[in-house]
Length: 161
Image (cartoon, rainbow, N blue to C red; front, side):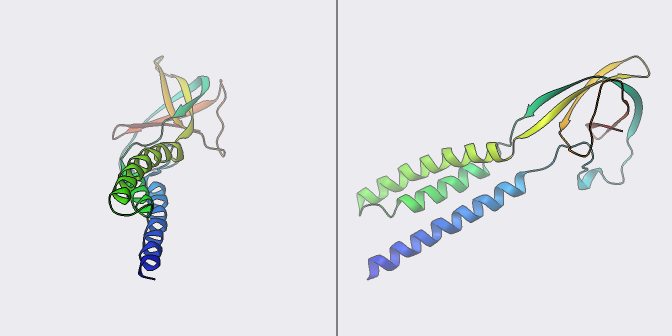
């Protein structure tokens, strides 16, 4: 009876760890779309330049690699695997589970936070040609020949209509 209670506690802890991992990964995701501003960018001055789009190319924006996914996966995997076997076998299973969970958690974090992006090449009115990568936003489309604004400030540049 005591063993069943201990195992159900471990199973509950593993489930709680998975919920924590999912919540943590959602917190890591931040939009790189042109119409999304961070809290720190609000009420700050930006330089505005006008230009014409020369080209638009689809690109992939890699996901985050903060370590949160690896830690959460390692904890969850270790707790879940520790229910296997007894004594030394349980410790070995927990170690293997932690390593496997950590690798899976890191891959999940990167995969869940990866975005489709656009590389937008703009010929500014000054004649300079620049390229800006930003996340795809279904509400805003860009085509060669479109007149756009290029906003820059605090190390961030974005293209908008």
